[in-house]
Image 1 (cartoon, one colour):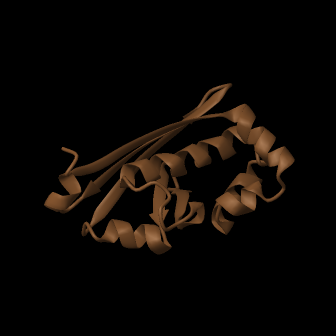
Image 2 (image 1 turned 90 degrees about the horizontal axis):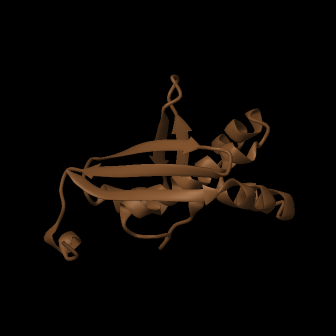
Length: 134
């Protein structure tokens, strides 16, 4: 059952500026695995922006915002064929686990100016208290 949907769009220019102005930006937002992936792509801003948008989209699909966890608790990985995947860690994983088995579907894309990500979270169970907005 679909629990949440999240989408985020990021201006690549703004991510490029953040990388250039704040030498800690990459380390604050991304895990070691993500940084390795991004460095293999020469920290190209469109790839960084896509991964950043993906984390934001995942948070929106969780329905929580960044309450009680941070960017590094959401890791964007990929399969051998290149399909993006989500690995939740720490408090983000604990939050998702309360719904039983879960799966997060993710799509990332970018153009010249923007990067976009779309996330759908599926869960086994939804408690009535989780549906108070419905």
